[in-house]
Length: 603
Image 1: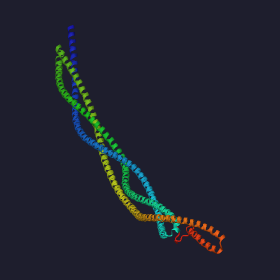
Image 2: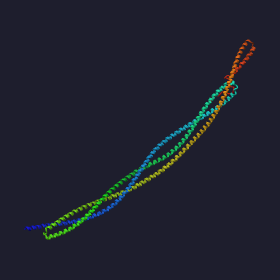
Image 3: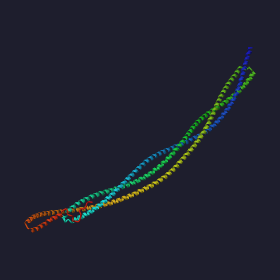
Image 4: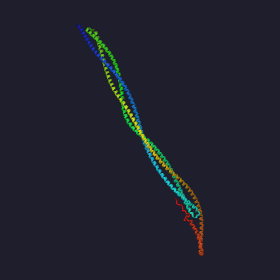
């Protein structure tokens, strides 16, 4: 019984184990069906991944094309930016040069104003000097007129002197002709000698004064000639200076007009420059934003390319794993089929033998079942790993799709920005061309207006210069004519003075001759005086004899008869009257019997 019991227990255990093995086989079959379903799902997922890969490949190619287009557009924008930057630098350089030119023109304007003030001061000084020279010339003319009047007075005095000399000559001739009457004209000769000496000294003094005045007149004439030449030269210099000043004023007016035009152009250019600087600054900011967007797009594209490469690698790995999984699934399916067959066979054997299985076969089956369970668990782990990888791949695909959509949106935005920048660039070019054309037209119109004003100013300046030149020439001709008349008059006066001088020399020679004759007359008078003294002595002797005779007569009168004494007394009286009459004739109170008056007073 115990053996039967043990055998039955063993059979029960075997049946239980077989039942468990059947249940395990059923569970394995269920798991295999689940694995098949999972494999089908994995196949569908792999197909979806293949389609996503192809779609991503197409999108990557489209993104690469967009990237190339955007890279070309960015290069074009970069070139446009560089060109605009160069144009901006050129405009800034032009503005700096214009600013420097305006600064130089302002300096020149200040210098011109200073030079104009100096020229005005010099002109005022020249006007004062000219007025002073004209006043001096008028004063010299007044002096010349006074000298001319003095010369006329001297001429009258010379004529009076000539008349006096003629009268003296006549008187001298009369004196010479009447020198026989020596006793009567001694005192007259002495007076005539003194008068002639005084007259000769007076005439010498007048001659010296006339010579001095003539020398002064000649010096004044020379000074007038020098002053006239200086005035003529100064007038010519003033005319030349006025012409130079007019030319300089014309140039300065042109420069001032150019300066005004440059100021206007500078104002317009400053406004246009500020506007262009603002627009260029906005364009630069947009270009910098586009450059940053391009750099970010390049970075994102490189990142996407790396991720795409990683996705390719993962897809290749997934494909290889899929192939391995398919192979493993097929192998598992085959083994499952084999297991199912074995399980069915075992079930049949179990149902047929129902407990007659050998323990070693049981252990073998248990080992196979455990091995199959392990392989199933391993396959389940692989399937879970593959599912995880598929999930990650799907997430990566979704992320790449979102990034690609964002990249497309940013590309569209950048394309819009590029189109807007190109439009702004075209607008800026058009504005710049408009500003340049307006500036050129304004410059041409202003230059034409300035040229017209300049021509008008030149005509006015030429007219005023011509009028001033004509007036100056007329004034100069008048002054030259006046100077010529004065020179002619001075030459005539000099000739007249020379004639007077010659006449005075002749008069002096005549006076010397008269003086010589007077000396001879004095010698003759001395001889006459000696004869007179001799006669005086004889008269004294006769008077003494007369006195003696008178005493003798008185003595005779007292002693003798009256008749004889009367005749003697009458004879003595007659003898005594002759010396008295002679003495009266030689006395100073004797009148001049020549019929001429004494020397006239000095004029």
